Length: 243
Ligand code: ADP
Ligand code: MG
Image (cartoon, rainbow, N blue to C red; front, side, top):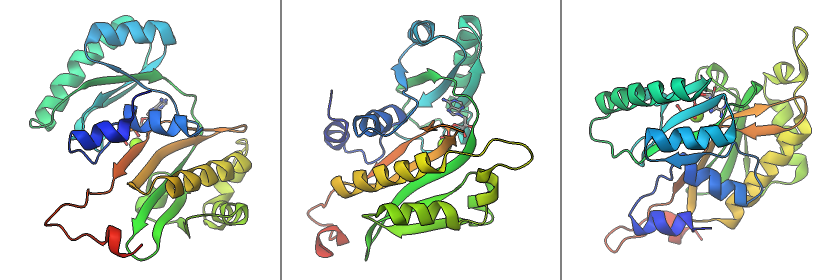
C-alpha cells in the first residue's frame, strides 16, 4: 500500500483526494465506502462492472475540495451506458466550473443505501491541538450550528456524550416511524477518528461528510483529509511551538 501522505508531501499538496483519504482511513479500520480512481471512462466502466451497479462517480482533483459545487458528483448510475454518458457530461461541467483545476480522473464507488446523514470531523486548534466535531448533516450544521466538540484524545464517555448532546438527537433516535440510527457504531467511529488524529499529527483536518448512520452500522461515503502546512524555512508556524 502506497503511503498517501508521503506522496502528497512529495508533490507539495496538503489536500488529499477522496480516494487517498479513504485509503488512509480504511487502513485505520474506519468504515468508508471505498473509491477507486479511473483515469478514463472505459476504466470507470470496468471498475463499475466489477463492483456492480448502481455506482456513484465523483471528480478527483487535488484542487477541488467540494466536488458537488462544481457538478462533480453523480449518484445512482444504473449501468455502463449511464456511467459512460455521465462521465462526459461531468468532465464538461467541471472544466467549465473549475477551468484551472488539474483533474486526475474520477472516483467510482458503490452506491450506499441512504442512512441518517451525520458529520464526523476533526480540526486542529492552535491551543488545544486536534478537536473532534460531531453533528447532523446539511442545514443542522451549516445553519443551526448544532454541533458537539471534544478535545482529542476522547474517552468512550466523551463520544457517548457528543452523540447525545446535539439538539437533533431525536432525529437519530428515529422519528416518524424511521428506524433509529446505530448510536453505538457512531460512538465507535468518533473514537476511531480521535485515535487516528492522535496518531497522525501531520493531519490538520479531517471531514467525513456525510456519514450514513444505519440501524446497524455506519459508513462514511465522503472523506477529506487535509495535511498541516509543512514547516517551511521562512514560515514560522505554530505547529512546532505549541508542542
Ligand atoms: P462533496 O465533495 O460535494 O461533499 P460528496 O462526496 O459528499 O461530495 O457527495 C455529495 C453527496 O452525494 C453526499 O452528500 C451523499 O448524499 C451522496 N453520496 C456520495 N457518495 C455516495 C455513495 N457512495 N453512496 C450514496 N450516496 C453518496
Ligand atoms: Mg461531502
